[in-house]
Length: 154
Image: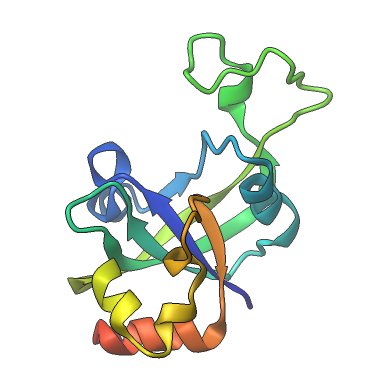
């Protein structure tokens, strides 16, 4: 099993939204590296830290799980979608996604400031200057540490 960090803006789709719908396709990702993580590396059962980005403060708010195999992101074919890609064709999709299901919500957000201040977590990709990817791999040690600091029991 691998571990991931997935970012979403809470006013667009936050951990409360995932809890309400239970399962959601992670659509609209338009970065090749993030797409490749979903398409080629994520497997059903992988766990992800759900991170609220572009929030005050930003931070990890809970846990999600990859469910199902990757499949083409349908928004790439929808001309009315902001994620429409005219170069994408159903027979040759460019963008892939996986579904995530809600696992749990932290009682309190583990803020980015707290993550950066931690001697173990400060090495996480999300702490590195200039890192803006919406999906990042997470070392199992870091995943466990985030869960411990957030007092989350699996």
